[in-house]
Image (cartoon, rainbow, N blue to C red):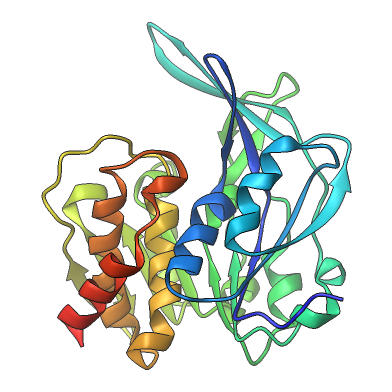
Length: 280
């Protein structure tokens, strides 16, 4: 039986096809080590191939509950003179509340991190009325054609957004649907729109607050948005639930993350402590 956890993380891990092989990716893969560095006990619900060797890289950061699938969610980026085209080469299984281990249903914090619309945010959120729930909705805004080419999906579920406490996404995620932010800020309790090195904007209770990043020399931008979101939710218990302060902490920790690559981009415990102390 799964043991009690502080943060429940739900979403697909991804296999990213890169020159020379396969690499672990996806929101949960960057969020889990971030939550672990914050000192949280993490439960990870995902779906992947039963023999997926990349799953072992998640084990140091939390307890894993796997919904077995024929394949793991697999992405490939194809580059040409006209730019980058992204493809989904394989998908895993849909995730539902009924897949959550009994020992995890009292988790006080829940992070929904879909990468290919593999869950229904409303269906999951309505079963956690006492938890603080965060959604990173980039995966709800993806669709793909028969050949796997990824394309934008116009998603907006008002009833789901009403049930979720914190929504985090980048300006790039909604570049083809700029009206999303105006609509979402009227519904969401806490909405954060990130904008890379320019920082971003936090919307709450009819107002807005700009937050800053840090001037750094980036090595790898992959996963920075996931680190930001996880840093925000992970810092909340240390900041007495003050979302505005957690946003400021997350902006700095996301900047640190781009100076490293892979799962090493997650913040360290010392970095987290330093930024928490700066805003406390």
